[in-house]
Structures are given as C-alpha cells and as structure tokens.
Amino acid sequence: MYDPERLCTGLPFQDDNYSRPRAPELNIPDKPYCPFRLDIWQFGTSVLKHFPNSGIPEIDAIWPPLVSENPRDRPCAKEVMDKLNEVVRSIRPSDLHLPVKDTYLANI
Image 1 (cartoon, rainbow, N blue to C red):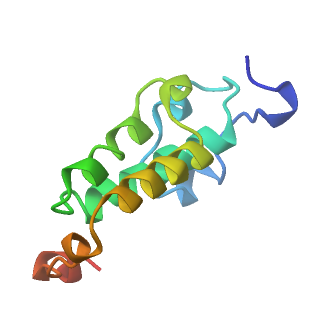
Image 2 (cartoon, rainbow, N blue to C red):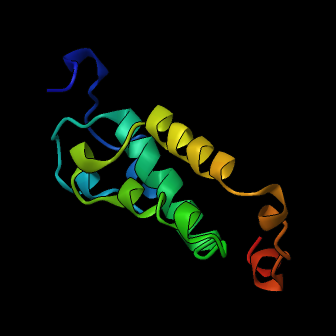
C-alpha cells in the first residue's frame, strides 16, 4: 500500500496546460496516485521516445518497466539507478564506446 501522505489527485497542471503524454493513472478522475511513480512513467516515456535503442540490450531492457500500465509494477528511481549501475559496471569500458547516431540528435 502507498503511504497516503504521498498520494495526489488531479492533474499536476491545469488540463489546458498539461501537454505531456498522460500516465494511465491520470485517466481516472479523482483517483489518488503516487507522484513518484508518475514521474517514473514520464521519465520512461521520454527515454523510450528519444533513445529507443542504445545498442546495449541490457540497458535497453531497463526502460520498458518504467512505463508499465500498473503504477505498482514500475520500479522506483533508486531501483532503476541501481540496475543501471549494475549493468554499466558489468560492461567492459571499450564496449561502452558506441557511435552517436544522427537520429538521436535530430530529435532534440
């Protein structure tokens, strides 16, 4: 169960000013949601939009759970950072030197 003091209701901004994609939990009016899990969904959406394929499968596998339909299935930020740290430390430094694709720069 979520800590009730950490739950919010309604959009983070007025409806006409909220231009981001909406996390699934925002589509249910007045239903309390965890703002931290909402932030994870927003972050995951941005990563998958701008960097859908890093060329490192172990890193690419980290991102899809961030946009899970069920907020309780999303990892917290610390879990994501710990997993990313674990993966990066397991890869030889020379294997991390990948070319920057022009498609990444075109979307910025």
